[in-house]
Image (tube, rainbow, N blue to C red; front, side, top):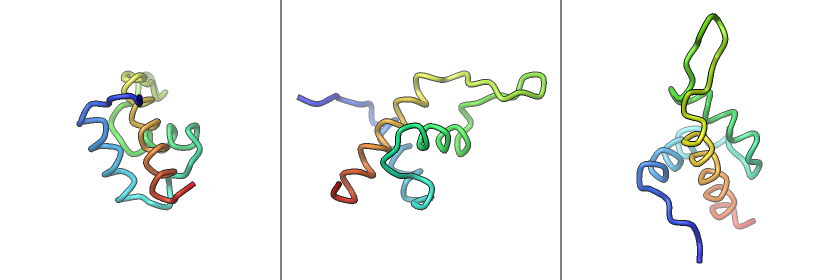
Length: 74
C-alpha cells in the first residue's frame, strides 16, 4: 500500500514539474530547494528567508520526486 496524498499537494507538485521540467530530478534535496524557491512557502524575516510551511514543502518535494522518477521510468 502506498501513501495517500492530498489533491492540493499533487496538483502543486505536478504543476511545478510541468512548468519547470529542467529544475526537478530524482533527488529529494534538490527538489526541496526548488519547491522553496518557486513557491511562497518561505517568508523573509530580518533579511533571512525562513521556512514557515516546512512539512507542506517536504510533502510537495517528495511527491515531485516520485512523479519525476515515475515519469522518466527510473
